[in-house]
Amino acid sequence: MASLTADDWIRAAAAHLAANGVDAVRVEPLAASLGVSKGSFYWHFSNRDALLDAVLEWWRRAGVSDVVAQLEQDETEPEARLRALLRRAFAHRDCGFDVGVRAWAARERRAHEAAREVDGVRTDYVVSLLRAAGAPDAERRAAVVYRTLLGDYALRAAGAEGLDGPAVEDLTSWALGRL
Image (tube, rainbow, N blue to C red; front, side):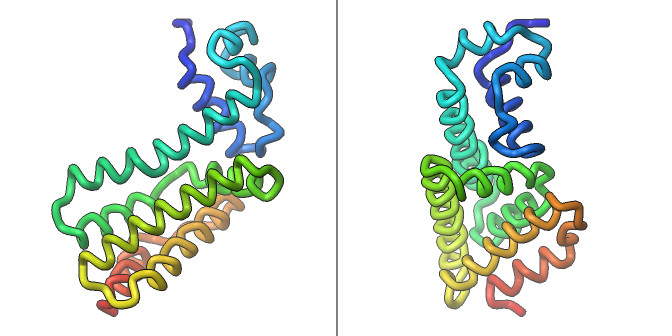
């Protein structure tokens, strides 16, 4: 096996967090799942806390800034960006990660602060798209859309079916003030 990168460890930690919660993010089980010794871990991280900090930073990047950058590159109109964002968000397969971070956030300040920051940036972006598209009451509509998404993630993490495409399109149309 090729040598592992810090990103490999972060992704493995994120998968463990999504599947079993933050308490499952331990060096030895991660090393076993990656098929390496725990010495590999210490090449990249000083300790478990450093890994957990990196997981939260990865979430900020992958779950927010990378998504926004891609949408801004792919779509020119605010309504098209919003529709693409919501299709992507509601189809996202790793909904357990957001749920896991929120469970962790209920217990630990750094996760709470990260969740609050991510929620704020995500909601602000939806508000900006709604305003640019001329939607009425953008803040309230963005809050409803975002909380619906988080509820969908929680339900799917518990085994329920997620909202289907037509329901997501209806929600988007409602958010835009077109229903």
